[in-house]
Image (cartoon, rainbow, N blue to C red; front, top):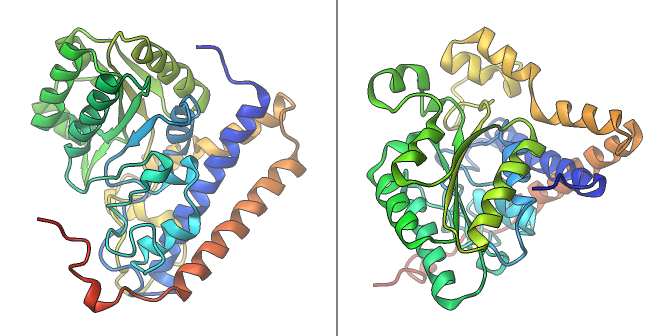
Length: 340
């Protein structure tokens, strides 16, 4: 897969910044507006290079099916940040009218059929969408995103087996952020998994499996792009393991007082107790790293990068204010979208 040009790389950086700013504002909501977000919000700060690098390879009508850590994908696909934030705030102007919330975002108009809160379930959904595309001969490819914990679910093995047998046009992207909820992968996989790298699980299904640095969007782009070309040519699925570090804990919720002073950086240290690990991950943060690379190669200047970052802050601030002003769903609509 040929590397993207400079304009496309700037496009990648722009969306990485938008996702990070969005996630940071969701995180801040628990402090600035307690009670606005009910329950958990599962953030993906640290995953931006993986998300955008993968989606930069897609055709406009290709489908994207992630799991519940799903805020960033629709932003790249063209969904309004206002609608996504309002949905996370469970407001009537959200993209699911406030009934989906953080874990169940959906925007079919932008080829985002929906995320699932059940670990591993979206893998099977993606294969179903890929089967439909195959039968209809649309030429579409389906991108299936899921965490490393999902690779231990039966749905993972059953779906990859079926997709391989039927040569479905689907790319399975295993986002290995090194934590399954609150368990470090080294503790879990030493006893129960196939070992490192997780991409070797593809061997069981006779499909390609590769592991890439998920903090480098260009490496993700190359690996996913190759898999997409293969899928679109009718050669079947591939498994991409994208490795990056999750900079927030498994799920954010209402913080018990007192609120830590450095709220945006404390959580992974507080929750996981691995200070050196967290500091190393922060030093390898994909956004400043890619920013520096783009400036070095002349695709960006400090001024143009700052303009992108300022625009993202303004855009997401607007989304927050829009969501806060949006009304809650009407009680009489509680069963309106329930079907039997």
